[in-house]
Image (tube, rainbow, N blue to C red; front, side):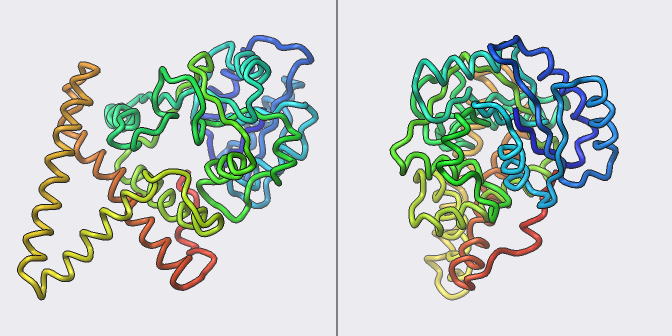
Length: 334
C-alpha cells in the first residue's frame, strides 16, 4: 500500500488503523507513507506508529506533491502488487483482499471500487451528497456506487507493479489529475480499468465551500495540462464546465455592446440555476435528506464554476502563454 501525505495530523491515525485491520493476504503486505515535509505533527505520529508496527515504512517525498510521493513509494515498494490508498478515506476490512482478487479475476490492468463520499460536519455531508450526483460528476462511472465494469478512471487504484513501471509511473509535472492522466495513458496502451462494488471505501471530501472551490479550481486548471500533453480528453464531461463558464464570460463582455448578448447571458444563467435547483431537489429527495437542500445549489455551483474557471485559466497559461503553470495553482490545498 502506498500513501502520499502532507500535514494530515487530523486524519493520519484513523487512516492507518483502517489499513492495519485489513484481512491478511498470501505473502502479507507493507504500508509505505511518503511524507511531503509535514510540519504539523504528522511526522511525529507516523514515526511513533512505525516503532510499534513493522509493516509501516516512512520515506521522504522532497517533491511535496502527490505524484512525486506516489512514485517514490512505488520505487521503494517490495511487493508485486501496488495499492494506492488515501489518508482521507476509510476502508472495509476486506478492501485489500477484494482489490487483489478483482485484479486476478478480471485480468484488468487497474482495479478499484466506486468513489463513495461521506461527511462528518453538516456542510461536508452536503458536499458528499452532491459529489455522488451525476449533476456534479457528469455521470462518471467512478461516482456510481453500484456500477461494475470498465471505466475511464477509478478511485485510488490497484495495479501490478510491472504495469506502473511499463507506463512510466505518474507524471511528476502534474500537481493534480495525475491519476486521470495515468489512466488515460493506460487506456491508450489498450489497457483495461475495472470498477467493482465489492471494493469498498469511504472518502471524506472537503468540509467547506472555500476548500472545495480551491480543490476544483486546481482540478480544472491541471486538466488542461493533461489534454495538452495527450492532445485529447478522456471524456467530454471534462470540457463542459469550462465551455459553460467561458460562454458566460464571452456573453458578459459582449453585453456591453449588444443587447442580444445581455439577453443570452440572462437566459443561459437562468437556465443553469433552474437546472441547479431541480438537481438539488432530486439529489436531496432521492436520499431523503431535504435538510441539506438550502446549501445544495451553492455546493453544485462551487463544483461547476470553480472547475470551469480553473480550466479557462489553464487554457490561458498552458496553451496561450505556453507556461509551466502558476505557483498559485501548484500549492496543494491540503
